[in-house]
Length: 50
Image (cartoon, rainbow, N blue to C red; front, side, top):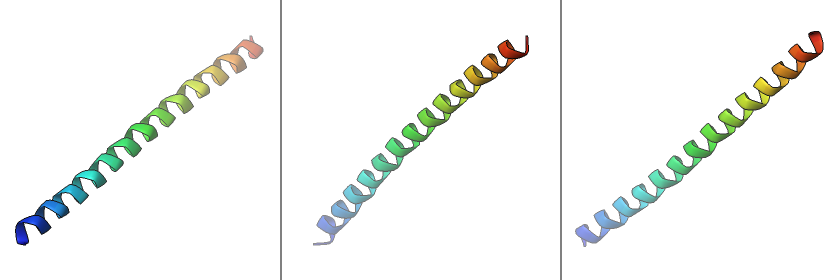
């Protein structure tokens, strides 16, 4: 019936939303890691210059 179809649609969208959320979390984590790597590199470079 229509209700079942709607429920299936909703579940599919919900799952898709969860996947996107996970991907966003991972992306943010990668950005943070990249930034801290960059900071470490800059610190090392500054250390060499000094």
